[in-house]
Length: 290
Image (cartoon, rainbow, N blue to C red):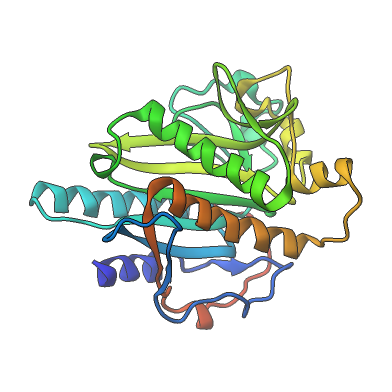
C-alpha cells in the first residue's frame, strides 16, 4: 500500500510549492515516524500520514489525491483486505470551495469574475475559503474500524480542534447547537465539511491559524450571516500580548493537530516520506488553473 500511495503523491503533487513563510527543511521526514498516543491499545491501528503542513498545495491536486486514495481503499475492502487509515495535512493556495448543495447566494461576487478559483465539491456544507495560514486536515479513514455514525465522526473532528485550542493555546472553544464547526465566542475558527463513500471518509477540517481573513469578506462563510470568522493568532492577540510569530504558531498547531487526531481516533500515526519533495521547484505564487 505504501508504494501505491507514494506513487500517487509523486504524480498528483507536482506543481506544489513551499509557503514563503516556511523553512523548507524543518520537520521534513525522510522515513516513517511513529507518533504514539498516550492511551494506546496494545496493538493500535496504523494511520499513514502525509505531512505537507508547510506546503501550499493547489486545491484540485489535493482533491484528486484524496479521491484516488478513497478508490484504492474501497478496492481493498471489496477484496476483503485490510487497509490502513490515512491522514493528509497541508495548506492550500487561495481558493473558494462549495459543497454539493451550496447556493451562489452566499457569494458576494460574480462567479464569472471571482477573486480566486471556485470549485463545487462533493462535501457537505456551504462556501468556504482556504488559503495560506490555514491548516487543513484530510482524514481518509474507514469508519467500519471506528464508529459507523456520521454525527459521531463530525463531533470527533470538532473534538480534535477543541483539544488543540485548549492544550496548546489555552483558548476555550466550543460547539454550537445546530452548527458544525468549532467556535470561540462568536468567531468560527474551524470549518468542517466531509464526504463519506462506503464508510470511507474524505475532505475534512480547516483550522484558521494565521489566515488573512480578508477573502472571507467576499463570501458568507458556511452560509452563516450573523457570525464571524476568527484565527488563533487573532484570538491570542485579543487575549494577552504574545511574541509568537506566525511560523511558530503554525508549527505548534500542526503538532497539536496530529497528537489530538491520534488520541481521538486511537491511531498510531506513521509519517510517510513524500517522494520528490527535495527536487520540486518552488514556482512563483500564482493561482492554480484547474
